[in-house]
Image 1 (spheres, rainbow, N blue to C red):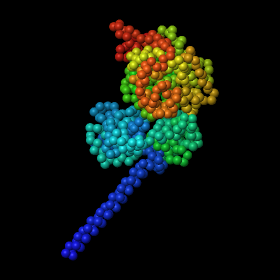
Image 2: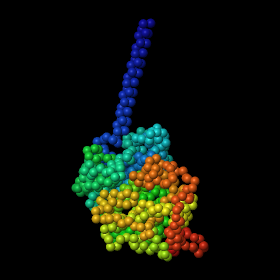
Image 3: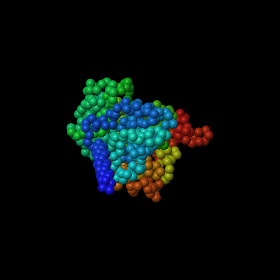
Image 4: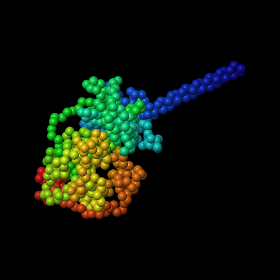
Length: 581
């Protein structure tokens, strides 16, 4: 009996000790995991120099190639960032096989996040000039529900062919946090004199900029790094010196990352690459007038806008595509093919959210050597001189009559705007906006500009389509009886409500953000939600102004022999050669 009691006591003691040490081990492992999670969440804010400077671009290229050729077709991006609309933007190396986004329709990619949640991956475009492919994927609802505050700290997802089960990703190490859009160097451009760097989160207020002395530019490739001085700081644009040519190999094994450093703080995370070797084009005469704008889903408006402005003298167009998903590329190709004039359209993939001012700065500095004057307009804005009303057809010299001929000190022409209302329309006018919207407000609105690029200040600062000028240059304000911009601003509700998605300006509140209700950037009488007012179709109608409607009808309308009526931009029904323009 005593021996049995001893055995029972020994067994009970052994079980108790096993449970105790198992519990200690569990707590130790749990604490270790929590420590790792804590370090991961801090990664965006505190990290050593080497991790921060090229956080997004320094992955081992051999690892990348191994993954893209693996049997599982598992693609790991070089960098990823979380956009404000809860979309993940993923950047890949330029060597990614283009069958993943161009040639092979049988491949359908999906983003797999940590934990196995997934969403479709959509090809977004190629970054210029690095040709890095980018993809977008929405943060899955299941992840959003776990973070109701919206402050997500997510690791970078991977891409797989969605025909293969997401289980193939289990065990794959996902340890890099998606970069925050709130603080990021996102773009750079090299001139012959310096490097222009674009960054979010450094100058957050429109008229308050950090002094250049508080900043420096940092260039890094592998273990090589160089620091240069910042010479200009305005809005999201910074200029700094090139690193010495001998700082990096002529053909570095890894791309050269560029970032900014604030005083002695850690370098800002960056997805920008430095391109030290400028592509020098053969000397050619500058185009007199070019046009630049930021676009998103403007396919139905672009042919009319390009046809009209190319007919009056614009022959180069630069579009900064801010996330279109409406066949923009095909529309542009058709527009160029069907236009009898020699026009050039360049499209930049510009996925950066709320960066209109920075995009215009990029446009001004990137095309200074190819254009004398740059017209900064949106695609619902048309330049018009009332004196053109008697012309039977357009002429490519028309726009040049606006420009100063004997005064080189004029750096900018400021043209007043007339804002047009819905004019009774309930859908997009089949003949185009010039013909469909004819009733406008009586008051003149703030101006849009045509800018002499040589006169733009080195800071590249711009506000509402006009630029700060260099010392010695002046702006000239024109009168509406001389020239005016017809702004088809308040269109049919089905079109206007699309504005509620997101503003493009860095310094203007989104439509649904309940701030600055009396701002000029707000629509009078409209709240913060896309709810159509009962009298919308007849609002903003003080003056019935049909001048541009009549001119555009005379210039661009024809009746075919079969009796069918068409406008010049209706490429499916008419050939522009028959219009004599």
